Image (cartoon, protein in one colour):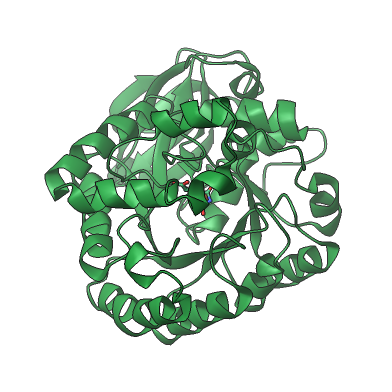
Length: 407
Ligand code: DI6
Ligand code: FE
């Protein structure tokens, strides 16, 4: 008590129901780890008190939660938020009969966004990404991962990552940056993918690491992306530069990419519709998070479901993300992804919420700071005008966010 009296909290949020999603508070009777009519005390940027309201608690500011619900701030752990142009025209093409792979092979798809991204200035990229970012923030997102991957030359990849860093400076949000140079083959390396991977490994990764522009390295392992061997070369280069890896894996076919990623202690393997039992086991053994992306599944009208039951059985943590990108998931809503994960994948509302909080934090390697409400973690919180947190998955559009707290 004496410590509290001498050093009051910066602020206290009281009269709130708290869905902590923290292991220490969850059990089978209380799966969301709820503290009813609870109170959170924050010092600096850190949660210093969590529990019942105690009139002895002193603070500079008292915030009345009016009986609303407090959750961890939401985390979108897989986005391509920064890019030039949009691909509404290709959306229309697909509705007139063309397949995603046909469009990619015809030089459209990712490459058309590469052309627009290369042509755009840093300011232009910032402006268009900021618009999308605001839309995510209106729904309680306090951490967002942003990948490069539409520059595909050293200068343009760095330009994208700098824009992502600038978004973090200009908005009250945590941005985790990912270098995705091995996203697609740029036109100047047509039929020479190995030479492009040389460039990624020998020039881009060292440069990005030296400039401190990336928190991790990703690749697109797919028959229209990069092979298993090429992906492994990217992982080795990342490892040499001390950067953790993650992977776009098994989105359109099984390339054993998720298993490879797990062998490199990847933070996450993402997409996973075509994931095999063998790779699931490797993910479970190595603590690699499965990131499911219902937006891309929906937008491509994919029919092969990710193996949810097998992932559950193996105890692989499952995260959910928007994959916000101009080609396969032009999403600007993370809450919508919760609903899609429930309706399309049959995830439960609890799993969906864990997927954008505690499991998403693990997918970004920030689980010691964010993802649940616990003493010692950062006060990155969202306050909702709802009757129960399951409503976040239930609602189809709209946002019940009252406020976010972000240091
Ligand atoms: N998989 C995807 O769904 C996106 N990237 C990837 O590797 C698609 C990116 C795009 O089409 O622009
Ligand atoms: Fe993606």
